[in-house]
Length: 152
Image (tube, rainbow, N blue to C red):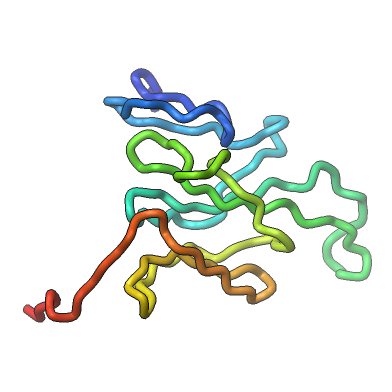
């Protein structure tokens, strides 16, 4: 695939842009070598003008051992990061200084989901490998009304 005409975002902390690229955009995930690289581990979710996706960076080094059996496995988990990117140009969310944030104490995350809470706010949530449910309000207000819904 050719990237000609696309806006290249060098990393998650690259400066925001003031215009929307005509052809689209792409972001380079954090990487230190061609064999050990950050990679996307979930499906993406687009909600309220933002794209949500999770990535995993493998540990910087693995301390030997073989897996399995578990008693001999000394491999450590990597770092899970949640990316929040503005759909039109890849900018980070309002008030943020990075497109990604580390998910503490996690070695994986589930696909992000969108739901409307009882206060009518839009929320994006996910679960970590420890079963911890992480809800978070979207940056754009979301309103729904049951009387607007019609069955066909």
